[in-house]
Image (cartoon, rainbow, N blue to C red):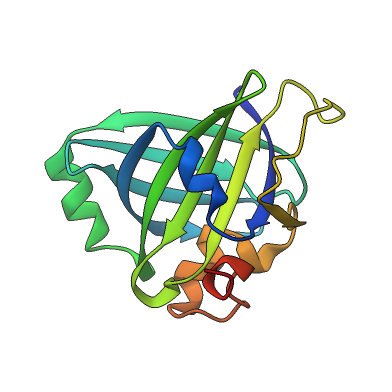
Length: 164
């Protein structure tokens, strides 16, 4: 069983951009969701695809199972989605031995910018970059599955959209 221990934050300003080392274009959609799990298909850079089953527990510790699938299969599965396709650019930012992933959403969620970091344990200490805003770990309004189900931006956009 794979475990994912992740913390999620809103992003303030655009200072994070200076540390970005890689950027990927991600399109993802949800195929099914229950109170216990979601099933997601993701296409990255229009080159590779994965199918992911993720537990629906709230908080920082969730179970995640991810499998590579053929790109053409992923494109077909996207047509079977429930809700909207999530479009975002994922930027990787190494800092203090960790890799932050900053997702700048596009399309219906334009302006929303979230940062995530995977940790070795739930109580693992880490340095907060200055561009981190309010923590939203466990807030279902910021789950990608919820954003896809809503089909439009229903959460407040991150402060980065107003603080140039």
